Image 1 (cartoon, rainbow, N blue to C red):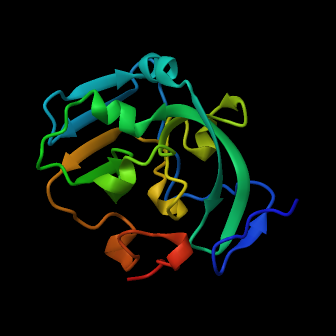
Image 2 (cartoon, rainbow, N blue to C red; image 1 turned 45 degrees about the vertical axis):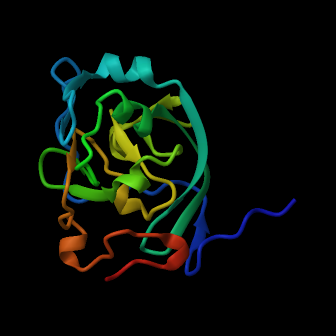
Length: 186
């Protein structure tokens, strides 16, 4: 059986490369948290043990980088973002999700894209706790978008009524980042 096709302009690589903007942030598991805020009725702060306990979903998904490489069949474990958001009671005004590492990097998703069932708050990759170099302890994984939407070292999710450009969008990248449509640049 042959592998499914890759999006246009992509070539397959065997291992997930380590690419990031700046150095990984320092990590202290005892004080680490994820904040969920914005256009919702029930803001929440999750500890790492909270998220690891919620990490019951496993998906297998390809990962596509705007640089033109793809890794096939990565096995992620985490919590579905749609389930986390459902528990927060979104306001009608919520249309976009801003995901941030809390320091320098952010990316925005349309709420409809964020609610796809394969979008995860990932705590594990290939059966192992998510390594710092791949975004541990928590990474947003958005398989249907280019890799810049899969924010490493995730610390906050904010719901907004209006979209703003994220880190790469401020540098000319497409706001949606669909690899099947080659939405690399605006």
